[in-house]
Length: 319
Image 1 (cartoon, helix red, strand yellow):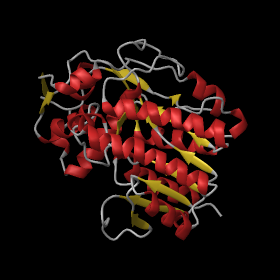
Image 2 (image 1 turned 135 degrees about the vertical axis):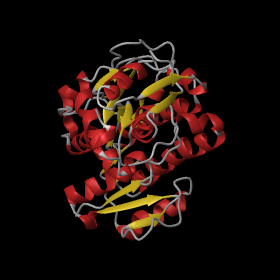
Image 3 (image 1 turned 180 degrees about the vertical axis):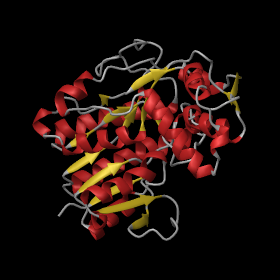
């Protein structure tokens, strides 16, 4: 019987991945976990600190875990404010997960990576999976190290570790947390609540992105893929589209009357400036069938529909 442990289940991806996995594999086949003491009345949730190896071992043994989706981590913007925490959670935590997985003969370990592994020396457009990785943030540094650990544990110990590099993720479920790419979520809330948004990136700062439903399916498609077809273990590039703040603003303004934007770049623009404008997903397409259903227009329409419902905004606000 499959028993999946999800670490970092309270984050942007984990919040939606857990119910997605339970719908797909059975509600009793997924244990969600995070550092918080409790998560409301949710069943199948445990408190778990990935920097504590003993607690990882106990959880794996108690719940007879067969597979791990390791999402626990400190993201780019917060990581720059507290690099020590980012190092401990992102690197030591990942090492603990891999060691526990090896010790307990876990079948598959899925570790999402990020475009944060790239840096100024990386090509700016259509970046291949195998390329220069010289990030300028602690987040990026720890994720490069995690990618190399994934490759090492696969080659050295035969641990079936799989990874993909997420671009910016757009979602209406989890509230934005002021991360580097979170402007692409925040902008919808401000458009619907206040009809004005101050963007912390430059108007022409182009970045790769994707919508959450495609991000979730990509992760489970990689999880289910035939291991023999997977040639890359440190991280497959995936994206759906690239856009600038000005471009997504124009898409929203076409749909919401009177929406205005201004630009006041802060330190997050400096982080984004080190990342590529687009990445090449062809390895993922070829080796495990990656695809996406949501283009930018469909994403914008879906975000406005769901966030309008979430905020109780009436139709008179829309174009």
